Length: 64
Image (cartoon, rainbow, N blue to C red; front, side, top):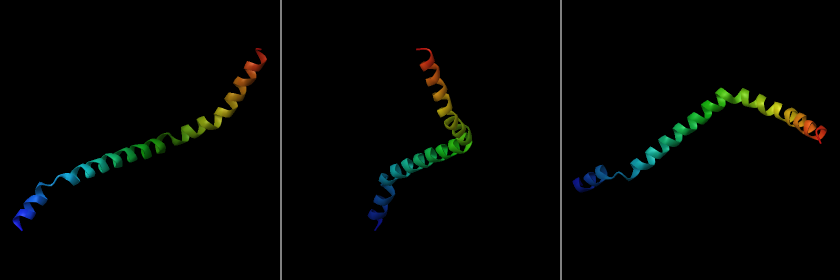
């Protein structure tokens, strides 16, 4: 029984999986925070983009 307990305490195979899951959770939180902070600004940017592209296309067409 002591041998099994010692082997269990020396086993570090699961530690790597836990570390990777903590890193993934941190990255996920960073993405969620970025979307929360910059979401409205990005939405405005993407809503304004079609009008800007149309104006640029019209300017190119008139300069030909």
